Image 1 (cartoon, rainbow, N blue to C red):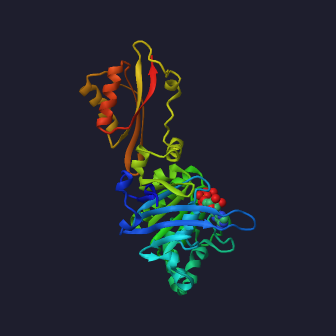
Image 2 (image 1 turned 90 degrees about the vertical axis):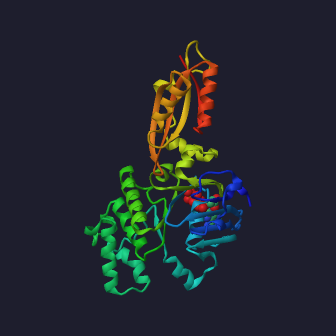
Image 3 (image 1 turned 120 degrees about the vertical axis):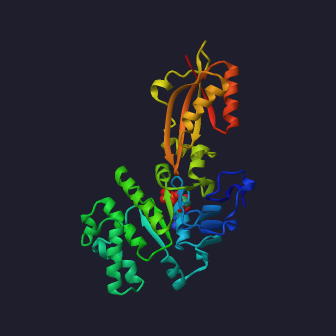
Length: 374
Ligand SMILES: Nc1ncnc2c1ncn2[C@@H]1O[C@H](COP(=O)(O)OP(=O)(O)OP(=O)(O)O)[C@@H](O)[C@H]1O
């Protein structure tokens, strides 16, 4: 096993030797233990190694994002959690039960504690909203009276009590996903798998659905696993994130840690799409590689915590006795923490730059030198 794959999600980023494998995370809701998944060769098509050396834990009660590009192995990972696929090697433990070893009735019973929502909602068009939500309860053998009461409760929970008798064709995308969420929660699962559940929705509806998922996590304590190719979804909702690339976990940890210290190029490319690392055009167009006489060096600094941006600028100026200009700043709330990127202008002299970089490194602010402005 590759040590870099042995990560317990929820641990701050640490050197590989300090990372805990799944087995060291006893209070996990889902544990992948030395998982690989190979789809066999079929009708002349070669076999595919979809997942390799997967060994991590999803904390109970967490919202964990699993992010990766198309083909990274996200859907394969999800199908292992709900037992639709068996791993080629290793075990998948869900709520202390080895789902990869279950078959038949035992598997079906275990699957009732794992809800799932989908990109295209997967509702039955011939059934009303209420009857779609009732479906898993009918399959589980609930009485008609119990189903009626539970469906009413679920429709209210997801905020569409008035859509009880509507058919999917009469509902908006957001309302359809609310029906999907209610149906997924019907049998009171302990895990909710969300497979690109907001990818077909506009940004405003996406935000509303992600807010609903956050309140479900908070109020019902359901562990949520968010499969997505969008870092903006991870940023808004998840506290933990696992980055998959070519079937391997390349990085994992707290979202705020990953956003401030992305290590793997694939993570950096996901972040570049959302964090707005691009500089304002008016500033970018002025940056040059060689120091102009009397010019400023331009330094980008990553900061964390409320007020951290102001503190860095003030302390740098005070403690080093230098003129520090704030050329641009952006602060976001990520994983419940303020995370930001400051672009500072400092005196272009070599000694001043060296002192600023040493100070930033001493206080562990990631920083990069972007060039100079006149
Ligand atoms: N049933 C299958 N049979 C053969 N190969 C498969 C099967 N399912 C997935 N694969 C292959 O396994 C790899 C991982 O696919 P998977 O669907 O898990 O990735 P993904 O990250 O979910 O991608 P996407 O975002 O495009 O859905 C891909 O190369 C895919 O072609």
